[in-house]
Length: 255
Image 1 (cartoon, helix red, strand yellow):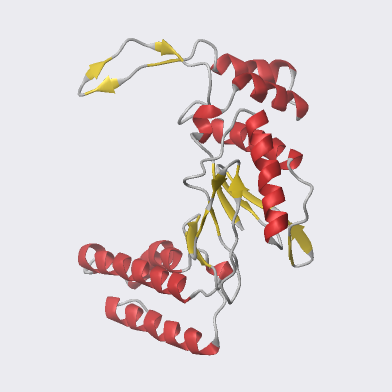
Image 2 (spheres, rainbow, N blue to C red):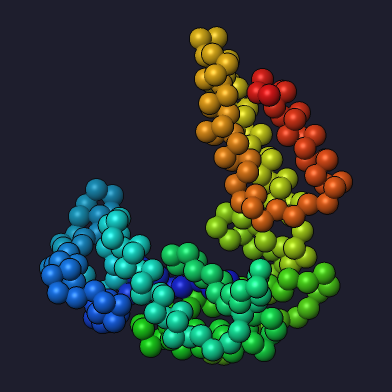
């Protein structure tokens, strides 16, 4: 798998190409004119130590903080992804998945080093055509296997760093596919949340048991179970982590 980092993702999107992509996806007429109007005469300035520069025109990139920008970027990247297809991905539950795209976080998946290199080459080419660029210093590769396997991926003349672990969307992936570190990290994060709640909120006598349980479900449980859908545990690790969770619950007053 290859974790791809796009250089200055939002700020590099060429608007002229974006308008063409939107038309290709069926966005026309008043709707596309309305979107384009948001970017007409857009300007920016620089503020340093309270001093402001003169404003200057901004002719490339998406508007930062605009709720429409993620949708525009997803559409823009979807076109790049579709045009770079051609190599079969990895099979999950009977489906072939070749890439994972969440905003500017991109993961390419392939069953072999050769296929992954071909997929990365296609993706890099389509990015260049669309005015985007892969950051080779921040993009990394990882092989999911019980034993170490070398995977040298290149973008142009640059070789990507191969790593044994990578945090993607807040979840730690390891080359061996083991989840103990990730589960321990989640339990540690939940423990820190519990201690903070116990010091500031839970100790309040006016809180009813129902209110405490509500706090438990809305904060502690969410932190503890983030990304749990992909946890794979043995019976031993399940018992070990279950005991730790129970100790946390008893220590903090939640059951």
